[in-house]
Image (tube, rainbow, N blue to C red; front, side, top):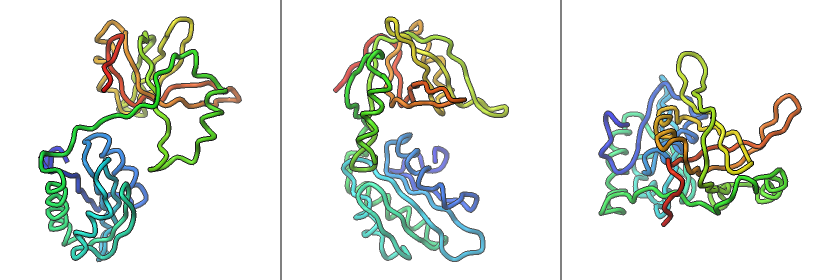
Length: 237
């Protein structure tokens, strides 16, 4: 995407090496990374029709965009936030052009800068098993009911390290302390932000979702990091 289509208003990518069972998850990650609507297409070798899945950004109805591209597709369905579709491989380039043109017409000033919407700022001491049990009552999560996201500020990082399998360590594992409370944090895919995390002497603020990690019969709360900012405070809009 960055090499070939970085200036496009949307992400439309496809490959014969991708499994159709994961394209929806990948589309979600691409939306998070680029802040643009994302369509990911699995192209089965020696088959006439490829399968795609898309995820959108706030304010952009994905299913309506696919209707505008209907003549290039073999079928499609979904809603404003997520959709699936089928397309012939030889039509992917034309589909990419039309979809990008539709997105550009919807956002004439360019796609808006991505925003992270947080539900509340909480002290680490408030993140208890009781709180997580109450949060479980909000399930099931989905497009109309996203998983709660929290902010914790004034934290101190301890014991930060890179983790991963094989030779590539793509994730961070660290602990944060606030007063007398210390909690483990996992930042998936954020190994390249280790220097940033420590750049303010270990002071940081985190956006996260809490999770119970069960290992060998022991249940401990950990924070799944969504984003981070060095320093003791963070500006909110």
